[in-house]
Amino acid sequence: MAGRASGTWAEALLSFVQQYPGGHLREIRRRLSIPIGTLDYHLYQLGRKGFIAIRFQGGYKCCFPETPVGFGTPMSEEEKLLLSLLRQAVPRAILLQLYLDGPAPPGALAEEVSASSTNLAYYLRRLEAVGVVVREGAGAGRTVRLAEPKRVHEILLRYPPLPETVVDRFLRFWSELHP
Image 1 (cartoon, rainbow, N blue to C red):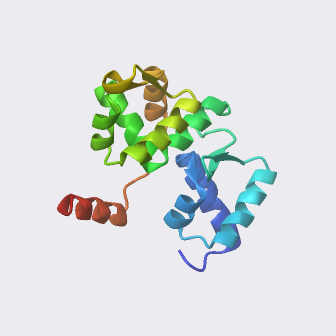
Image 2 (tube, rainbow, N blue to C red):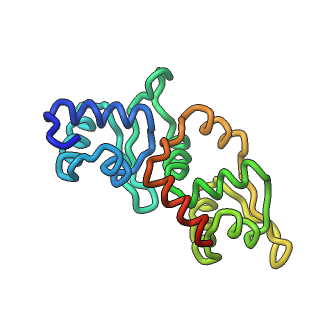
């Protein structure tokens, strides 16, 4: 994609953000091969024109269309928050694991999502702070559950996940070879 004309960079960026709302800056840059300065410029221009909204979430600059294609209404702040978390690997793994298998003790959850206990605790604090997960009990009886499974379900149905790239497949394959 190198050497694109300025107008097509903006079109590619807007199309990507409309198709995959909540993507963060580095992921968009990697997926579209847009130089960072060019990406910043077009995000600014598209934001100024009211096509894209930027939200900072957990150290990430996440991009959203002002109005997602096919829905006619702007995204709520709740949707933006949940979607920005689902676009990050570890929070997505945690939320999907809890959605698919229900409440789990933190140790089992860490094992299922391949996260260290410290890493899991960090993300659980973030997810709990925004009201997405709830930790209940204490000690060996502690469990983690989704606060509102229906809300996670609706977001998963409404917005497609980012397609897996060749690099993603290779990294998954490599990690399975070397557990």
